[in-house]
Length: 238
Image 1 (cartoon, one colour):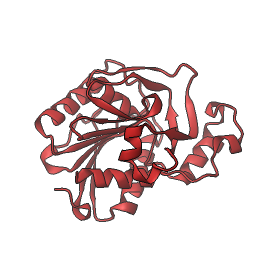
Image 2 (tube, helix red, strand yellow):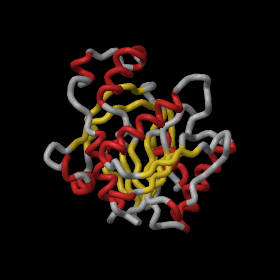
Image 3 (cartoon, rainbow, N blue to C red):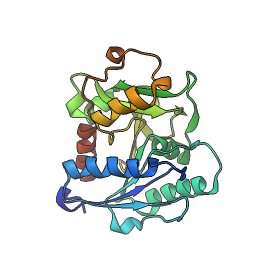
Image 4 (cartoon, rainbow, N blue to C red):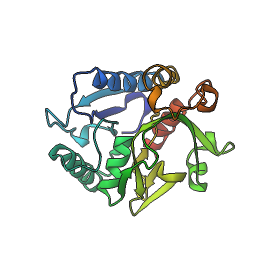
């Protein structure tokens, strides 16, 4: 496994059904993002909440934990099952890599001993420059010169204490890779296009955008989500 031309990707949609189209929007974002950088990849979606289904790790190069509208620190049975699935995958299927995004980032951190808390300043909805550590500059060569990558942030919880045996690639618990190099997580959303990011900030979440002006939010500057996902695909072969 590992060729960009025949990748198999499984995505867990980690948000309870709430009568909106949120779940389908999450699916479309991942479909569009991965199809644009790896058009021949196969993508399957899994529902760990209602259907309680999890991917057979032997069939996939990458397992993705999506964002979601639920407290990642809660004790819902399905949440605990996701955490256990992640631990078992890392232990028993080390060649299958895991990518955590937003809620998935927090859940992975929790699964391996990190601590999650509510964001002290309240929910964050903004396009931000996420500043890299020295290890992060090496991991993301495209961002080495600027020292940061730009992506949309949509979250009300954050990783407060990093999990042991994970390396911080960005400041403030924004991005981790584990020592074994088979788990990578982002607090930001690399799968959300710049166009959708603008829409979310300007049209749908005005109350969460920190009351900043469009200029301060940087919404006219393109996000670098696809560059991050390109790096994820390269990482799969490492």
